[in-house]
Amino acid sequence: MPLKRLLSALALAALPLAGAAETGPLRVELNKTEEIDGGGCRAFFLFRNQTGKSFEGFEMSLAILDGQGVIDRLLSIDAAPLPVQRTTLKLFEIPEINCGNISEILLHDITSCQPQNEDQMDCFPILELGSRAAAPLVK
Image (tube, rainbow, N blue to C red; front, top):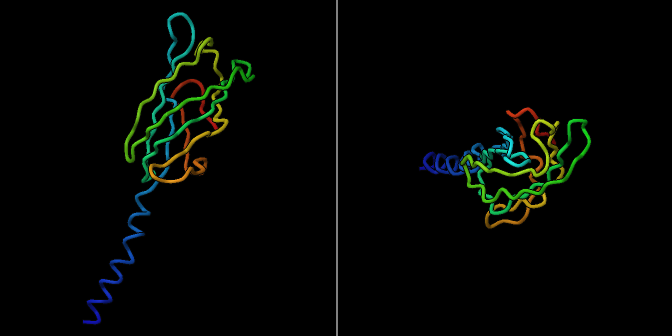
């Protein structure tokens, strides 16, 4: 009987560790860009949410740097909702600049990072950024 209780206690103690192992990063990838008829650039972002949390709020402030590396503008984008364990595609338009004239996109700030049914949190530590486009996406 004591051995059975010990095994049950060990099994229960291991449960939180198993849940923690399932959490991972929130990956944000600039997948591609394309020119918009009439001017501007359309950016395709993939959000791979491996955090173990769904996000009901996720807004980023991006600095768009021109071909000379000078900040052209700040762009705020709202990517919510981001369901848990899902990849989400979001398209955003960057007006009045050609895609070929964007040298870099800088994640300037995260203005909202709201897990579902939780308080706001700092998402910078869990973010992983990447780009398949010509312009890198950086912190």
